[in-house]
Length: 167
Ligand SMILES: [Zn+2]
Image (cartoon, rainbow, N blue to C red; front, side, top):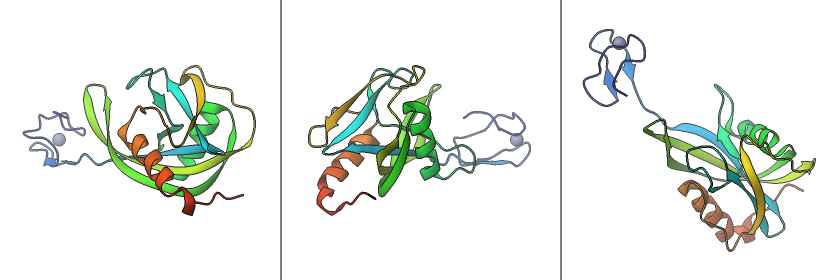
């Protein structure tokens, strides 16, 4: 970020920085997202991204919070939008700081994940979001689009014996 988002003045350093022209303070905070490890027995669902960043890589259903939206609500909404199903959230699976490369910037993100199951509906992918889906065993996940997803899958697998899904 090179310009003040309020007045457009040139910033003298990377954030955190106070604009010399209008005194507006600019920070770069992590952006929260909500996502799910959607379970079916010992398997989880992954979808293949069709949009950058990381186009073509396996992804968990997830997305950024809109405005004041809670990450859990974002997770439910994203599953509805990307998969066409209603999900039931189970235990919180973890949150991870990651990097999201977009529009020439590396943005800090706070990715929050829940375990979930499909409550109602059949999976119908939004072709603007994903080209295919697959169920993978939790003990042999593919490399995911984002390191935060590799991490949550590892943690879910490690803690599996102590994790319970809401029935
Ligand atoms: Zn300014």
